[in-house]
Image (cartoon, rainbow, N blue to C red; front, side, top):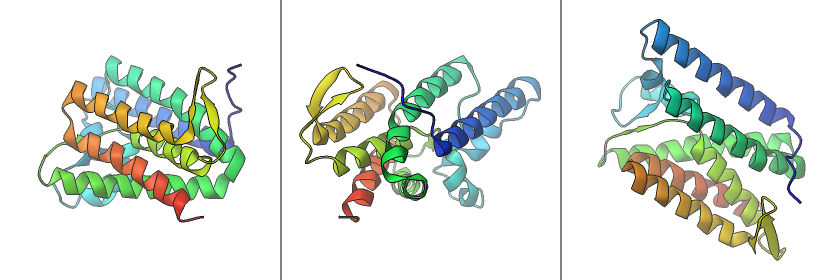
Length: 196
């Protein structure tokens, strides 16, 4: 039976921080005429701003109703996926994984961005990366129940992450965002593989 996991400490901080950023972006954009989202999103245009964009892009969301809906969906999935990881492997390991995904997905996206310019917004690479890390770590346990609904092998969950990224790419045409997603998945698997 499906149940929401408890809100763990790192997940609470992450969700509070990203929600505050989303509210700030909406106020800045819609009431103050400031385009902060594009300043903190990861841009393929390399420059001084790239230094902070490598770590601020998870906070960037489109400050409109579609961006808010996307943020809320990502936040729920982040909670559903990341809390069990933190419960099993601890706060310190989760923080290390999130930092690795942030930097790894950014580097992968920037390399691809040299050929396919674009921007990376949000923390979808983090959700997919933690799913992939968790799935890799428990791959020998047999089947799992994906959100209490779909029984599958853990490694198939990694394939599902790639497939969902591909669907997002087909819907948006965002090559740099697709690269960040795949980078997040790859970093998640590598992070857990190196611990073996």
